[in-house]
Length: 349
Image 1 (cartoon, rainbow, N blue to C red):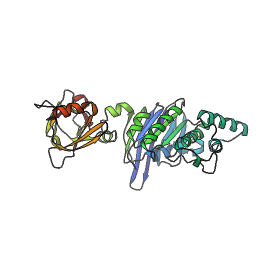
Image 2 (image 1 turned 135 degrees about the vertical axis):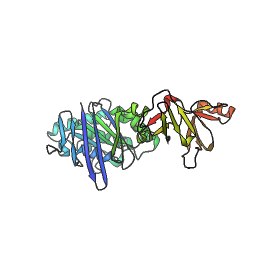
Image 3 (image 1 turned 30 degrees about the horizontal axis):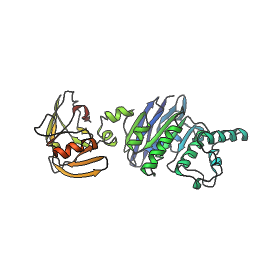
Image 4 (image 1 turned 120 degrees about the vertical axis):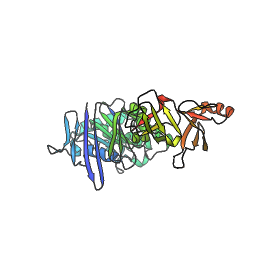
């Protein structure tokens, strides 16, 4: 089922402007706090109304400013999971699961029982939300949404308040629970790890503006835009001066890169992820930067080096060393240079 969303909304000085069209079933929206992620979800759900644009799910039009169509939230067949799950505190698990259902009492009861079984909530039917663990609350919230069989499920940072261990476990559980769901799921997050793990399609928003939309893994591998690289976790992004089709100067790093690939005329920065540098001892090779250690942080599975750039204004260069390289570093000492492998260099606009 296709989904097409084009939204423009102005709130004071802030403007949200996004557009994507996709057949993918798992879509991630990545952006910093205040970028417009939740506003996009709320517009799809009908909680907020755009100033103009349209929202279509298959042949179903939820909103269209040109025709004046704006369905009420309860008519959109969209399930929305809030950050805190928004369970009714005075209702039991069974009552919460059935809260969105209407119609015949017997059919409603059958659907509740079906969801209780599907989400492994047997024995918890009479408990109140405060008597449940975080994982059980998540399952109740999902069961309540799935009970009325929505076309789209919206997940608004459902793991943001959890510690790392619990977050990983509940992410995996949610993916398993949604594995047989045929509709579209949209996950909003500021965590690139969550988004990468969950989504097939990725929308990146920065300050209300859409940076890019496309295949998740392709965007992580080739972000193309400075903000996309930054939001997908690239630690080293520096201004670049294109000299010709195969040479680019990096003033902050005191080097000039010679690349086999063509360098577009509108490239303004290059990026390199912190674990992609190759240490070089001895003579300088092509596409290298000198190593001037400023600081080091040791972690159980990674050493993080912070290196000086060539100018006072330049940001630290981040070099993350995996455990497999530690023995070589201890034997040979700090390398003289770090090489930038061409296939890992990000050319950015």
